[in-house]
Length: 90
Image (cartoon, rainbow, N blue to C red; front, side, top):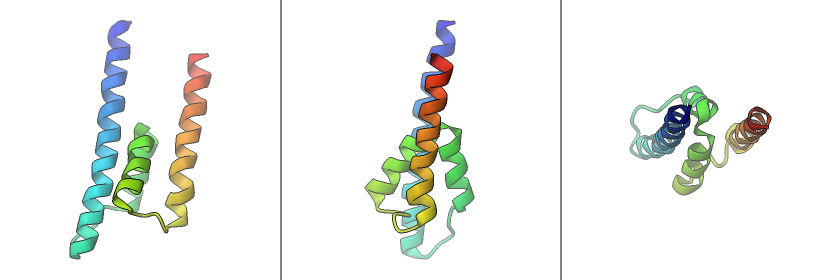
């Protein structure tokens, strides 16, 4: 059972790191006029557990901070994940 927690922790760190990187990559690509990462992909990564990384990426890179979908959506996903985690762990 302890391996389950280790795997979950590694997944949590990895998905949040990926989400953070995706926001940075998308910001860079936007500034140089190249291909962009789909907004759907950014949301899916957040929904798969990377909402903290996505939120930190938004703030750090100042990316998608004027899009209402992201300003409301990413924190809403984070709140839903916190509630779900509390329900599961309680």
